[in-house]
Image (cartoon, rainbow, N blue to C red; front, side, top):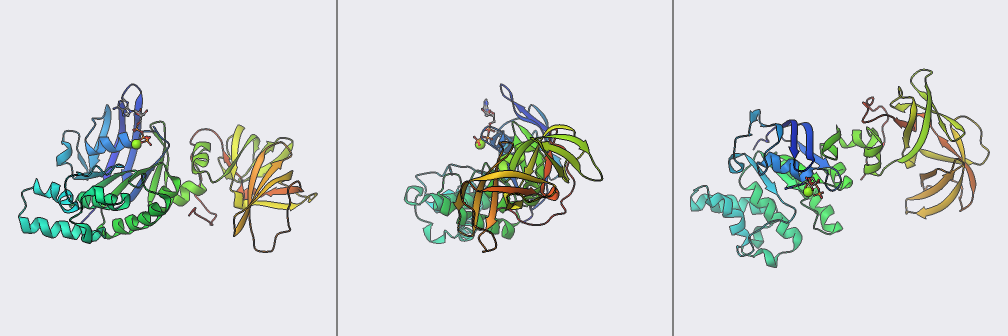
Length: 373
Ligand SMILES: Nc1ncnc2c1ncn2[C@@H]1O[C@H](COP(=O)(O)OP(=O)(O)OP(=O)(O)O)[C@@H](O)[C@H]1O
Ligand SMILES: [Mg+2]
């Protein structure tokens, strides 16, 4: 099986307002691609347009290079897995999976073979005779997956397929789903509002906001190089501080002011001057003894400590009144901190990322560590 390529060109869908607003996207054959964004940002509408359940107001959808605007849903080589499974309650698991095949006039033997292979693929072979009502949520979701996979689509559209499951089941199905996609080689377009799902499963993802795509990249790029404050905030991985960027340079950096403190930043949009956000990840914030000297140091105080096992989350309040989180490893190398301890905080220039202007283009990553797990 080979996966299909999906191209969206200025794709737009207006209801009362634009639900999908000039989206450009190119998903490669066999790619696991996630659409990530908050409720109402247009994820489901995008999938419904690709599946053919909605007609675009303008723009184009190409599947393997061919414009599908006039192709009805059942003739597109695309299948959808919905959040609520949408299984037929009165049919057995086997018959649910066989349903689509039976409409294709295949021989009985052929259908048997394909259904059993599909049930095997999702580890549900021993439940073939059960009706959905007697299966758990996770098992029903596997049947829904088998039902979509058995038709051998080039593209599988998945709309929050794990949304209704509890956290533990979600984690294990997440791993299985990713492995399954690699095995079958079908292109997956996976919709979710859960950043952890998108970051851990996808080859690439698009972050959406209000019908538009804000950023496209690999999980590492989007995590480490958020294009703007919206993405950084939505991924929930950075401290965001409002600053005044005063000037560019010298060299590839810029000067900014956080309250009265002057700082140098070396990452992000270095050409921007004016009010901006800077982001710094909690694991890059360094806590030093109060009174330590040198550039890029800000006085502050420990407000709260949260023990996380391997690490401790330190909630700080900087002199200018700004809250800041630090994450320190519990490796015995750090001095004991207590609530109310005055400290200095070192914000390394190469850890400070300026998110100035809107969705500004950003330089390519050079620094290495960490992708959220
Ligand atoms: N059939 C429709 N008629 C009118 N407005 C619609 C219709 N379908 C969706 N919308 C609107 O389009 C916008 C995008 O909806 P959509 O269902 O695509 O969001 P979503 O990203 O899938 O959200 P969620 O995470 O809540 O599922 C919303 O403002 C929604 O109210
Ligand atoms: Mg939706």
